[in-house]
Length: 294
Image (cartoon, rainbow, N blue to C red; front, top):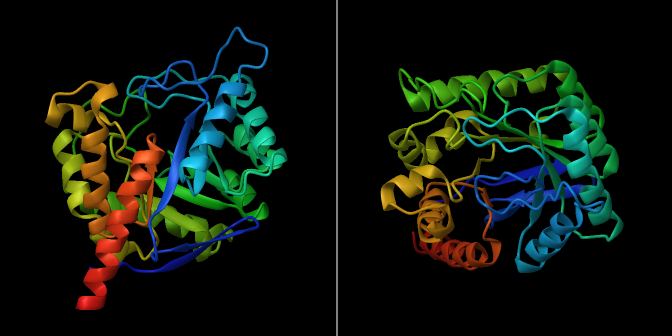
């Protein structure tokens, strides 16, 4: 299929989406990440340094953007106090910006004070997991900083999202929720070219819902007319299908990434950047050849 092209502005960066798949590398500056790659060391004075090291490695391995998060959003996760979350992410962002790593930095948070501190430190993308419940004050701040925003669909909160998961029509329900979020962004003055959507794989969905979402990514792009980010990396639906623990889900992640790209995804959010970079390069070559041959 021919992937729809978009141009996204994120601070001083311009992102051309659709020519090739962009990779958002994950840095969990937490002690309790579900993916077992948390970098935060509470007892170390410079606990953020492992996160910096990981971010530098991911950029070297092929990440087009780096996503920094200081609160685990695994099912049932407790809320982290604002001051603790800031302590985990702000020094990482400052250090990366100071070292001039030439890729956009994304802050993975939904809390206004954390996001403001991250933007002040140099982040240019806000990855908001509560994107279907947008806070207008937060959105106005994103507008004023000229940042890009990722609006993710979630049903409930990380603490409650996997309890009594139910949809009338999972695709239609997500589309309608994201459309309202997009309209709210536009209403406060965030421009079309700063909005990215994410259907929220693993966030208030069953295994079947997640598989259905991947099979229908083209519908989200077609109906919402915005570039799409997908984050299947190491998620539990892969473990369920393959009967693999979180440390052995790379092949399942690769398969999910391939299917997502074939369906029109523009950005993939992943842990294993080096391996996924090769996957993405191969998939983009296949897509390009198929378009030229059609």
